[in-house]
Image 1 (tube, helix red, strand yellow):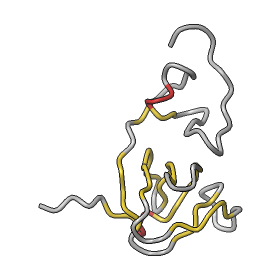
Image 2 (cartoon, rainbow, N blue to C red; image 1 turned 90 degrees about the vertical axis):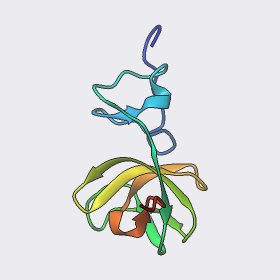
Image 3 (cartoon, rainbow, N blue to C red; image 1 turned 120 degrees about the vertical axis):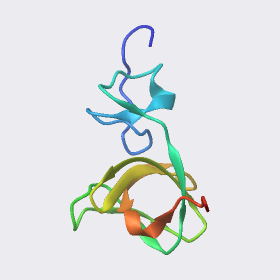
Length: 101
């Protein structure tokens, strides 16, 4: 990063106080950066504003959509709903890496 860190909207940019998308490293400072891991949504799932139950729903993701996962925290995954351009949490059980062994 060169210069000062800029303030980005955390609803549309994967940045929190503790972690940020590696693609934002030239814009923001974070203690940790993560490389997005593309996942495929396998069942309809809500993109939530926070990991807690009852959080605001930002969007409904449909099977086949891509979710760029940046963090796993228990049963939730945090990342980017690519088709919606939004950042939030989903139930991890609704995702599949698409990688077959």
